[in-house]
Image 1 (cartoon, one colour):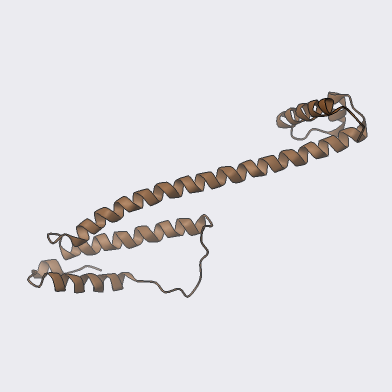
Image 2 (cartoon, rainbow, N blue to C red; image 1 turned 60 degrees about the horizontal axis):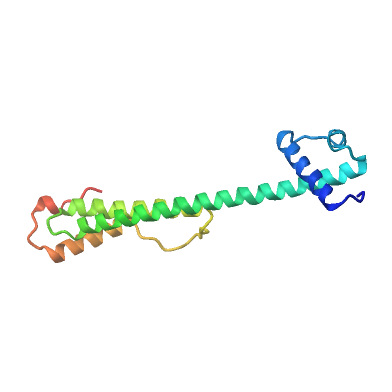
Length: 163
């Protein structure tokens, strides 16, 4: 590159960055005319500024993506915590019917699965085939057993569970 004082070079860079924002397809000829510089200097400066600009944009996009994902997941985790508290109140309440307890347990599992899927989609975790999982049938059996153990005097309407 032609030797210009650092102050003048920075001025060229700033002017070129602004011009590239307005006109991303700025040509070498337009750069030469805008800055009143030689062709070789225009080529080198344009290449340098475009590369720097592209790196800045990539970094900014990545920053925006990660902030957005983190903020969204924090909100989801907070909401899920509140849902869990309310569902467990229903599940452990003696006055709640077995059907409602199972519905609450189902809501817990389904909500957790959705949140985990969102985390997988966001790239926070990787999926692995063959991992153990609990099914809704298992939850219903656990709830029936728990219900039978805690309240043996339940009516037949309370113990019926729709699947």
